[in-house]
Length: 286
Image (cartoon, rainbow, N blue to C red):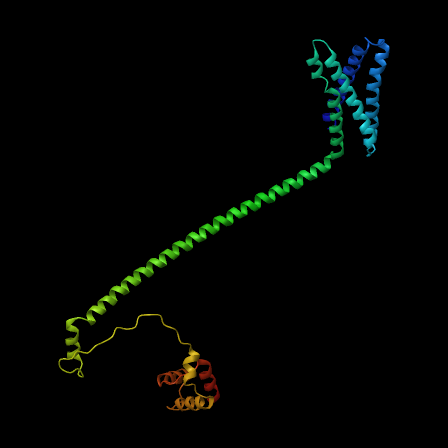
């Protein structure tokens, strides 16, 4: 995996060093002997190569030095400056030399990228673990999305069913209200009709001549249910009175009545008591 970044950096370094050496020799040999120009070019390339080697050593040890990095970039900038100066002093090919003047800086940048790659590189086991975690997260997200879509579809179906049922109930209520309205209208018409008084006069002895009785429509409106406790509390019997009444009804015939017969006659006589109290009184007197 390191070859993806180290090979381009090595290639760019070699090209920039050769180019720098060639430019220094060609540029300075007119002003000094070519061996001296060669030494100058090798000095620039050697300084750059030495700082690069030291940086790589520190990186292998997990260390870093800002001073060494600054010196390395300085040699790179010097090489770039030499190439730019030669481009401006060359005759007829300034553009071509400027086009390659960035190679030393580019080589230094590639080594920087390679260093970042090494500091962030992971082993195969770690990459496999990361991929497993990401796949698990994707699976959970997909399952959650599917569950949400299914719940949304179910809720939509339920709401549709409830809405349709409500519509049917409202339709039935509307029809019932219409039927009751027509029936009420018929009763009102009959009550106010011309023959109503005569019909009531013929069947009611208390109606005087020339006077027709008036009858009211039944009340049509909301009713409130009355609880059994309210009904019983109005005229509730005490336990002694209830026992005496149960005993009297039980022995009203011979042989004595059963509980079912006694309870029926108790209710028919207009008395009121809860089933629990009535059965308790029966047990006490029986």
